[in-house]
Image (cartoon, rainbow, N blue to C red; front, side, top):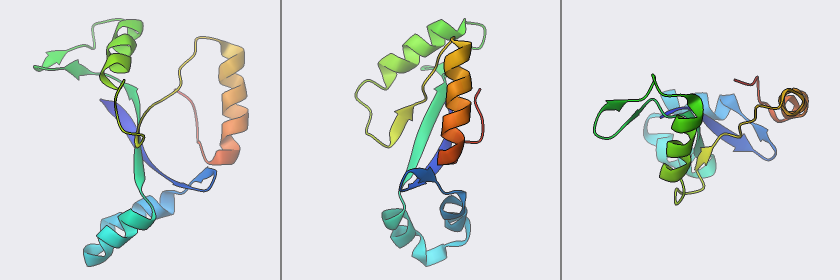
Length: 104
């Protein structure tokens, strides 16, 4: 799975909270408990057992990914996706306030 780790602080992402984990040492469990990370999944690059999917169209990979994450915990999130340029432009404009730095 291709994605990104994020830590939410209220309605915004907080990269500093994520970075602190690298040097947290023995404080890591406490930091992780206070500021849990979420994995936002963008794409499925391969499927078990080691079956590459990069040659498959995105809509097929997305369908497989959606099936795989159907019962996933809340901290494993499927990134929104659209083919609508207006929707993507709106996301880019409105999500910047939440700390989202771009769209794929």
